[in-house]
Amino acid sequence: AQIALERDYEAQREFDTRYRVLMETTEDAFVFVSATTGKVIDLNRKAAKILGGNREDITGSAFSQAFGSVQNAADFLTTLSETANTDAPKPIQAKTRNSNKQVMIAPKIFRVSGESVLLCMVSVGEKSTASNETAN
Amino acid sequence: AQIALERDYEAQREFDTRYRVLMETTEDAFVFVSATTGKVIDLNRKAAKILGGNREDITGSAFSQAFGSVQNAADFLTTLSETANTDAPKPIQAKTRNSNKQVMIAPKIFRVSGESVLLCMVSVGEKSTASNETAN
Image (cartoon, rainbow over all chains, first blue to last red; front, side):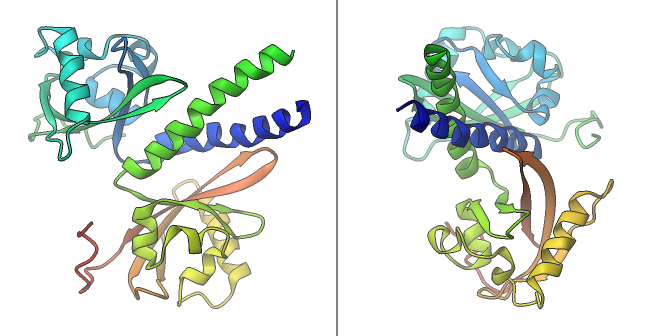
């Protein structure tokens, strides 16, 4: 059993690495959010840039805090989960607090280790005057 | 040590799941290829659609086989690795065998468990007459 566990462990290490490479290679902005606490589990650099912060600061903070337009964190989390559970979900509109950008949030929900997690794809919804979106 | 290993194992399970959700949510077409054997380790549905096959058939096959324009599998693999190792890599042009589409392949290389792996982002390079690209 110990050997089998170690073999699985090695295989899982691969997913860990592939996950990280994927997060930094995709052209989409992704934020993983706990559906229970509303806190950011992980996000990629593209998402951090749109939200106007850095990955380290945003990780662990409430996702709702990234949006100046959000009045109630609990309602926001409920809306994300309900939208994710809809058959043909419509993205949620919000305005970022730091960068003041109009964005669309498309959430998906899934379960892992008994916890519900939201994968939120964030895209800039309307043309922004800021030019740092395309710069890298 | 056993308990720590199991705790790590649980954490790694999360990456496994996040990896899978990410692969199916991203709007990019991704193929993971072994830099040693040239075989496809994994790909998402978007990539399978572009290549004109299904995920199950393509997984485990030589990546070069997906392209009618590739004459020499070993040279193709070398080109992918060399391009990935370039500072400012230029995507590789190829034509898919099954769907006869002109595509661009942008490879990245990374190491995991002592093996080199290529992450290839595939995009359709010129307008195709096939309408099934946007349909889902």
